[in-house]
Image (cartoon, rainbow, N blue to C red):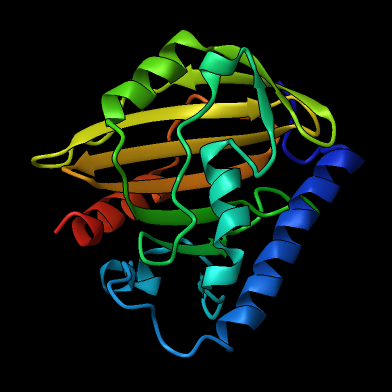
Length: 226
């Protein structure tokens, strides 16, 4: 298992690209003239729930940037092909009327290492969470083809916090190149689904749920499923 501090240049570039997306999103957020009618923004999570350094910014992703970030969260970026096809992740709606996304960077795990990105997604969906769980459980290994092929490994998490009246599921998605681990905690009640995720370089402690992520998940479920 790699030490998080010993990241490759490719990993640094990948997380650097994620940082660029957040930076563009932050600039774009200033230009948004209010929230779309019937948006999910009223269910957004308080910034204080994010495990960030004091004074760090929590960014609400504007509509123009939703397609890119929900593709990263779901594991199905725009234009990607999945092999085998029946392992394709469930997509998340990129419509601002369906989806609200907030994200922030946490504390770096070691000096010089990229910081983890914490993200919440609150979205309307016509899909069942049980179907997502079944796909992840069945498809422990698959390949995603976009600019370059990426081998994906998935691990189901056993200890996902319960949410009253909701179905819950958790898993880790490991991307072999450039080496990024995303932990996803998911809850769904009716047609509303909530994600809380942590994305970090390497796969250190990928099977252990970060307590800070659990707290964020609890806060996101409380707001998103109320």
